[in-house]
Amino acid sequence: MNRPVITKIISLGGVVAFFALIFSYAAGNLLSIGSFSSAFWTFIASVLFLSAFVIQVLLVDNFLISAGMIVAQVAAMTIFLGGSLSLVMFAAILIAIALLISAYYNGRLEVKNNLEIRFFKTGQVILRGASSAIAIFVIVAFISILDFEDPAAAKQHIGIAIRPLEPIASAYIPKFSIENSLTDISLKLLPKEADSIAPGARQLIVQEAAQRVAEVIGNFTGLKIRPADTITDILYDLTLGRLSNLPPILRTVFLVFGGFLIFLLIKFLLIFVNWLALGLGWLLYQALFNLGFFKIQTQSVEKYVISL
Image (cartoon, rainbow, N blue to C red):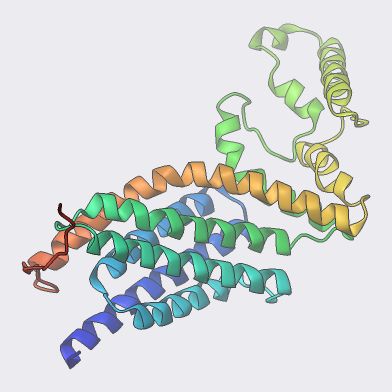
């Protein structure tokens, strides 16, 4: 392998590691802030990383070098997502490395098993494993920061997880916030015609509506819900609040099950990320080809066949 080829491989691996670092920073902000903008930038960063990773798999035909670059790229992800590098987080790092290496192996196998270069088909094979890697990494990073001994901190993390949905909910509930109580939401949902009602009567209507909603939620969940409870309070009591009362073993079982459900949800959302990553990867692939970064050659291949 000559020096120009090595330089290209190192450059390509460095770019992918840089995008992994950007993804780590964006996802770290998402887990600490939970705003819609942080979710958007995490979405963009994941598209950039996955598209660059597809290019890396297609162009670098050396397993050991690729495995080394993948380890470095996952290490870049841990800078803002690794936290205190607990045992659980260390296991997530190993799983992410294994999934990315598996994605590389399956992608290269797809290339070798086809006489033509089928970018989109090969890209889909690569992205199945690569997107699973980043999904598991983010889920474990979030679970690892949960503190069941501190309800206030746990409620804060619940709020961070659902805050990106505020703009969507605001389309139906004016100026919706996860810190709104059931009473606040009932007030915001009052029709404009209620403005002509006397303040005392309007307040009574709001209180009755909030109490009714609290009773419906309480009957459905088995929780004691009050009109003054916020959305964050209710979700905490429904999820982490219940888990905090369980023995550690059962708590771990439910966390694993909950993490699996979240993984399935994220994998569904990553379908759209994968489409964009494939499209961007194709544009990068064509640009690098036109710039002479790589070339496509034909080879004559001997093949053994069975005949009677």
